[in-house]
Image (tube, rainbow, N blue to C red):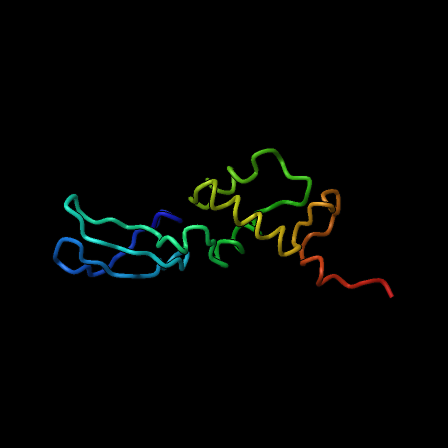
Length: 122
């Protein structure tokens, strides 16, 4: 898988240009496998290349320490999960968008829930 680097298996039609769509068992991203002159090409379809599966986002969230984060935290998480730096960066961006790690709350000590799910004072 080009996203998580795990091996994928599929039956690709035995002719040049034969294609099959499949999902990676590790990260659940949709993949397109095609038979080419040089072997088999495996890629993420164009419309899905920026997606980060929810499972990957959750794995990244579990590994993020409390803020402030060390410089290049995405690189150490990427190495730990055997993912690309870009995928982990996009997952962190998605977590920030979802309110788990608000940009304006970098010195907060509690980051376990999205900001809109926190209880408001009575």
